[in-house]
Every structure is written in C-alpha cells, then in structure tokens.
Image (cartoon, rainbow, N blue to C red; front, side, top):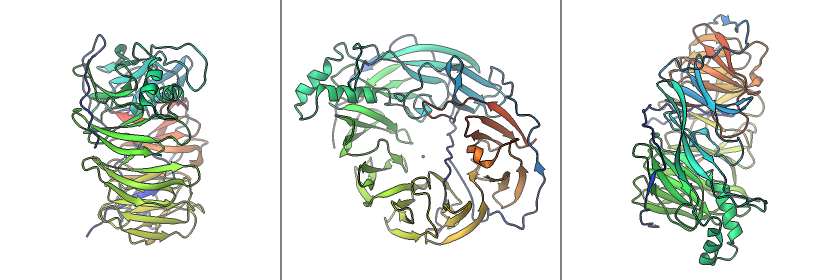
Length: 531
C-alpha cells in the first residue's frame, strides 16, 4: 500500500490558486433581493519525491550573479499578458492601491484601494477580490459607533463592487450592490434584545457583535461568480446573503437571530459556512451553520462553540475545527462532515498546532510542550507518537505544510530549533535526514522543481538534479526574506523581503528585478494569483 506523503516547513509559504477569467457584464443599480429559504436546523500543490534529496555528489554548477543594479523596475501601466496575475496591496503616497501584476513582473495595473487599511476589513484579500481578478468588493459609509465609542448613529453602510479591468485596461468603475442596514437601524438592536429575552444579550451586545462582524463577513465563491456577504436589510440581525454577478440578483440565505461574524466557502463551492454570535469578547461562543449554494438547505453544525473563528478544510465536505480559551489554550480538535452532520473527535488534549495534508488523509498534531508530534490516520483515527530529537518551534513550527510525492513514505519534512537541517518523517514515525540545509524550502506548482535558500538559491529537479544556483540580490541574506512565491507555470519566482519589497527572478537570465518597494503592511493579506 502506498502512502501519501507531505512536507512541513517552519517558514510561512502561501501560494495563491490560479483561476479562470470570465468577462462580466456591467450593472447599473442595486440588485433585487429574493426571500430567504426556510431555515432547517438539523488549503498549494506541492511536491518533493523521495528521490529529490540534495546530495553531496551532485555536480556543482555556476553561480549566476545578481543583477548589477536593483533600482525599481519601470513597470508600465498596463497588463502585457492574458494572466495569471499576482494581486496585492501597496502603500502609495495618496493612499493604498490594489495591484494586478503580470507573472513576469513586467506589466501591471493599479487602482486606488477604496477603503482604509484597518482591522475592520476581512483578513485576506481573496475575501474581497474575485478569483478571476475582475471584481473588488468594498464598503462605503458606516454602521456607527460601538464598544462604548461616541459618535453619530450612522446608517449608510453600503456594499459596492469595483470593476478592475477589461481587455487588460483599468476601468475602476464602481457599482452599488446594496445598502446593508435596515430603515430602523440602530433601534433594531433594542427590539431584538427584547424579543430574545436572553440574560446578558443586551442591545449593546448585539450592536457590538454586528459592527465587529459586518465588514469581516464576506467571501467570493471559488469560481468567482457569486459573493456571499452579511447584511441587515430585512431583519433585526445580520443574515447571510448571496449576490450573483451574472443576474445581479441578491438572495437572502438565512434569517436567524444572531449576528454573523465570518463567512467561508467549501473548496468545491457547494456550501457556505457562517459563524454567528450573540456577543463578542472573552468567552464568546459561535453557532456554525452550513447553507447549500442554492439556498435550499441550511444545517446547524456546531452550537456554543468557543472557536477562534474560521475552519480548516480537508476536502469539499469536511473541515477541522477546535475550541480555544484562556487556560487550556487550543483543545478538542474535531472533524465535521457537512453532508452527514457527523463529528469525529480527533485530539482532545491541548495542542500548539495541527497540520493536515492536502489529501485530507493524514494529520500532524503538535503537543503544547513542543517536544512531541502525533500523526493521525484520518481514515482510521489511529495515532502514532513521534518523539523528536530536539524541540520544535512550539508556536511557529509547521506554519506551512507542503505535500510530497504520494508514492513515497516520507510524509513530512521539518526543521528543529537547533539549526537549519531538515528531516523527513514517515507515518511509521521514522526520521530521516533529508540532506537539506536551508532557511527556506519551497516546492513548485508543477511538482517538478523545488528551491532551497540559505547562502544562495538552489533550484533542483524532482530527480535530485541541481539545475542552477543563483546568488541572492545584492547586499541581502536569506534572513532578509520571508516568503517565496512561484509563478503558476513554475518558470520563475518572486521573493518577498521582510522590509516589504518584492523581487522577480527570471531563471533564464538569473537576474532579479525589484518590482515593488512598498508592499502594504496592514489590511487584508494579499499576494494571491488570479486569472
């Protein structure tokens, strides 16, 4: 029986998904809203095969020097290709901008980002930017003060869309989707609290919860055709709504009494999750609902759940979640099946972190002490204890997981606190020196190449052949970089520096270009691929 391996790294690497581009028609006014259905309660392709281990016997190759100068490249205000595009936020003199850049780094389009970069925005740029890069969702207006703040009671919070580009040219056209607040806002909270009659659930608690979640609760469908968002247009609390970019219609998907705090889509686009609460702050608990994309089915999956917010998907119908509170920390790791409603207990004690493989077959759980790892077979829930030869980063190890060759029993690679040596770990619990000595390791989307970074960059094929060695940009060391981003076709990479700069490396010349100097340090996390 062949086991599916995967790769664990200490350094964070996030690869954006590539998606298909659809030309979308413009719209002119607010969408129409359909009533809600009846409520019924009831994570980059990566690859390192077993043979792809750097060996001292690999012939050396010439080190290609960095470019003679790394002044910012002159990037034209146009897109030169049909995609994919690297999307991110930059800090500009007149305020933040959203940027779409060709995979070569040679062309770009940018537009003013229509919101301030603050904590009221969702955590990821992919929550606001459609997967085809055509639409940017944003908010104008305000829901007024909360959390004891003073100020006028505003009721003009509005959801809008910006059409980013058409035929590679910036348009920046804005259109209204819908106003998000009811006519009686904010008096609705007092009415809601009175009708609920629940101890501790006051009008102020409901308002605080609403303001905390209303602009966080938004997510595009995986195909970029529909936008799920929270609104309070029709009831006393915020509900789940769905906007269709083709018909420009809005459908109300829920009508519960709680305030929506977050929204997420299943990877296959069949289900929409939302986490809803009565109050926010220490001790807050969520009820988590799953709603089918057509709005015909809504299921209550979790009740009074002390979660941090959000879930970890392992396939189209199952996700992992856990509870967290002061004292025990993270505990009670569970697998939830949306289709059946079944909940499996995976790991009950406290843990520092968990790492599923991309196939959803295996799970690594690190103990709170950081000196032991447990491997869980998610088919049988059988656990294998792995005692490590040294301490791992108790709160940083495994912050990235990369799948390895499914045909080899080397399921993880990890780095200990004591150095930059990386070790393979099989599901039998055996540790093997990988031969990798590096600060960063990254696997190409084509699963045929991988890169290590230490004193230089080394490019390998999956047959363990060192293809090329590149010097780092002039005056920079491995510690100056926090992330490697591959082009979707694996023909080159971008390096993200710790000081917010973006470098493009062309394999054919071995030269770097400084293509961005001012990556945004606040707001939704970007650097995602759209197409």
